Structures are given as structure tokens and as C-alpha cells.
Length: 338
Image (tube, rainbow, N blue to C red; front, side):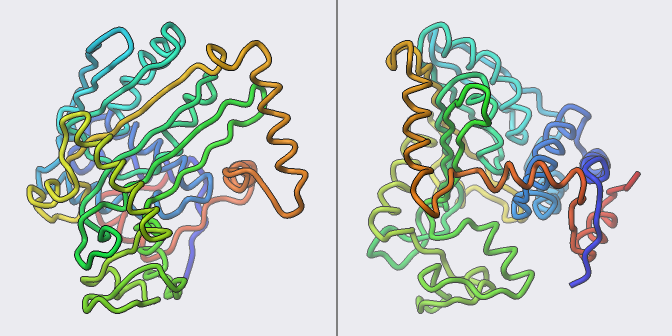
């Protein structure tokens, strides 16, 4: 597979120009392009430029409003609702984040619910700014049915990712981002594109048989929850937080209303932010750093996100590898390079 190396600036301009050419205004295009850029910069290619054709499909079909202007409302002093207005999630997140940080620091804990949004990005991008602001943060969102409940044989839950961020003072925050599925759908798409076999236990084919063929999972198959009933329980919790609690669509409801254009369905997102200094005492940071130090003293361990930070330091020098076929597809959709 031929790869073309792009600079970070080129990735951002490619994404921005493509979105502007297909119905986004500048605010929405810039917010989505920045999310794509961060994913590519940190080596998360499954949530970078690979997602751009899906964004465009949703704009072309009219499912997503590329000119949406999110509205932030304080439901209570520590509970915020962001109505994304039928737009992509990144601008809604950017709009509500300052108020969420202020509320969490003022009251010790705050919740932000994003509704009427279309989410297609990595969640770690969303919790890291909260952790950098000194807050512990949890975010989760549901999707369309992609995996069965434990013991079931029909997709019902989305891959249902969640991300958790923890502040570390002057050091980069600890952030993990994981799907409730054995593998994120984006990683399956990358494996299918690149012809890689998947680990056993990742999913089933259309006949309900275990498979390590990524394309078989995409073509009518389904992913499996990680850890069986454990991942299934987490997926159910996320459905209730990111849909039931905030009045948005469950995964099965999102599928029933989706136009199947290949872009992200309408749904919601739940974000919780907590100020650790309120409960952890004056030495909470030093105490937690001693915990990380003890953990890292065990041979072979590392903190979640370390690989992302290493990639982040290298990609400005090495550039971003982009499959030529994907680059040409984005160009055909109106994307332009510097």
C-alpha cells in the first residue's frame, strides 16, 4: 500500500478545505479538522482522515447541519446542556468546555450533556483538555448497534467508548480511551483496509461464527464485548448515561432513525468533571504521583496514553503517513493540499 507523508499543516488544511467544500461553515470545519489533526498527530489514524469521507457523506445527505451553532444552557449551577443543533460534536464540545471547567472548579463537580450531535471522533481528545485544566474527567457516548449483549446473537449496543482523564500537574495528564467492544470499530476499518487479521474473540461473521477477518465483521457481522459480560455491562452503563440520562437516543433508536449514509448518527454524550482538590486533600497530587511511580516501577508497565505522547513529539518531524488511495478520495471530495 502506497503511503504519502503529509505535514501536520497539510493534514489540517486538507480536512478544512474538504469540509468547507461540502457544506460546513468555518467554525464547524475548523473544529472538526482540529479533531482530525489531533488524532493523526498522536498516531490514532482510525479516527483521523479515515473518518473524513463519513463526515462528508453526512453533510451531503443533509443529515448533519454544517452551519449548526451550539447553544449552552445551565440546567443548574453544576449541570450544563449543550444543544449541538444537529451539527458535528467537536464544535459543541468547544462551545461548552469553558463553562464546564468553570462549573467544576466552582462547585467541585459538574456534568455536561451534549444532545442533538453527531459524534465520530476519538474521546481522549475531549477529556485531555479537562485534565490539563486540573480536573478528573469521564466522557462516554453511544453509537449504532455493533455488538450483542453478553449471551445474545444480535447487535444491540454500540461500540460505546469511554475516556477517562487524570491531571498530573506539570506532566502530561493520564488519559485512556477504550471501547466497550473487543476492538474499536475504527481499528476494524483500518485492519480491513490494510488486510490485517484480527485477534481471536474480536467478532462474529454474518452467520454468527467467530472470525478474525475484519471485512467479515464489517459485512454484516458484529463485534463482541470485551471480557464477555464485563464489557456488556459497561456498554449498558454507557447507553444509560449517554442516552437515557440525558434524553438522547439509545443505539437501537439511533439506527432506526439513521439514513444509512455512512456518517455518524444523531446521539448524545455525557461528560463528568471533578476537582480532585475538593476531596483528596492538599497533597492529592503528590499522593497520586506516588501511586503512578509505584505502578511504573513494575517491569513492563506504562501509563495509558504514553504512546500517544511519544507520537505527538515525533510527528512534527516525521510527518503523517496517509494511504494514497485515501488521499485521492479526499481530494476527489474537494480536499486541497497547501
